[in-house]
Image (cartoon, rainbow, N blue to C red; front, side, top):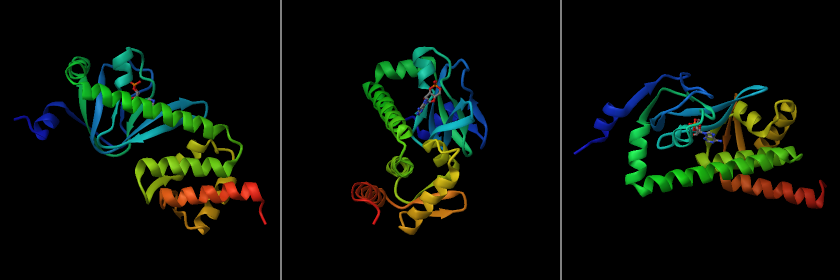
Length: 212
Ligand code: CMP
């Protein structure tokens, strides 16, 4: 019987924290499944390298270039010491042809990605900064669970508030007073999705009925 250790020995690759697994624009013939650790998917912008998403154990990446033969659409960097299972093109196609569940999982994952991008796009076009922050925190806590830490820099990037950092600090400190987040240095601990939803409702009511 093939054990998990056999698979890691045969297909596992180790990456140290900060190491590029591949770079945006590279030619790519492999896809990756995270066994342990975390990977940042990043993209170059006019304002530098931005994190699109942080992936963890069980998540996969690098399938796009294998499927459409185009260049890597983003870079992948180990956010901590990481072990990935690496499938080359032949193995990946073999698995897809043999196993409808894998195809379904990839389609589900791509749909979720598109949905998240649509939400993010909508959020980035709202002029209401309170709502931008609340929605970004909601997306984070729904994906990562209650009390999950979020680096301040990631929040700045996800809300597009690079030029409004004072405003962001003001919003976060109101949220801290309302006990929906805790700020510890450069990390925000998001209490719970239920609390953020309540806070969002409170902001919506405030908009309808005014401040006083
Ligand atoms: P590929 O284009 O081969 O290399 C970069 C990988 O990053 C890509 O495949 C996807 O697996 C992943 N990726 C690209 N854009 C996103 C996104 N917006 N959200 C999550 N993952 C992404």
